Image (cartoon, rainbow, N blue to C red; front, top):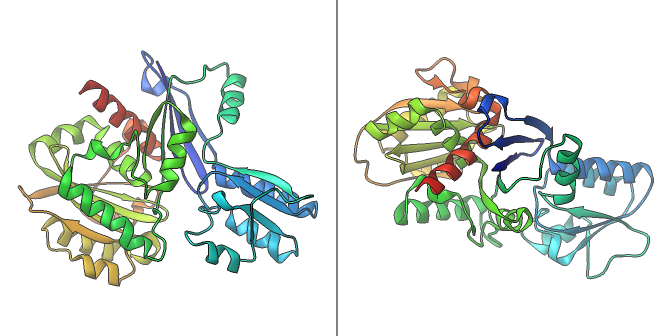
Length: 339
């Protein structure tokens, strides 16, 4: 069995092509421009050609918006299909205020750009060049703030965390065959990949930590804290026997290493308050009764150096920390199928 694992970020997409029976060190790995960056390049090329643009397709990451605003600033028009505006904003009125026109049909003369986080034709071509078979299964993760019109995305997203932790707090249940409808980016991604599973990027980084057999074994014996410090978000989980007893999420740029450390110390003790995190412009914190003490802190993510001066252990899942999300997807898939 061949499994394509994709961690779709704003700047890059990190890729693991897992081949059953092949050592993980020998499985092909790639760092490629993200779909959003590929869209941004198309937009800039059309700006240079002085062409209007028509966006259509699916919900996807909005990392191409800066190129879109440059296009508008240059005096050219941008049209978007009514069913494809979600990557720009939750609210149609917000999209219109950007200077973008909502249309039912492709405008004459506008260059079409198809929006998607996953293009089967791209991957068929890419893998064919490398003489690699199209995968049997595709696993993909992306950051999804969720669809909460007329409501704070931070609050809406954390309501989903609260629902998860109170109803079924098993970490592996966060890999979706059918994601919640509020997670409309993951919903679109699941439709695009065909056979496979999808998950939130932060969750997969946490699962990537558990790809390390030492971490996996330790969390069966005692409570642990896993923290992923990404380029955009800090995500912390309290994990014991594969169950999640706490979720903490903030914006990386808004917290110093000292502040993250202080948050984590309160978080581990079950004393970090949701309102304190939210009022400092973080997403929030949700906790349930802690069955044990939560001791060791394991850290990963591209901004992990923020905690380099503190008593934490840095992880390198599968020998490549930047592919932690891919290893997390693989870990989750293998666990679900083993169960």
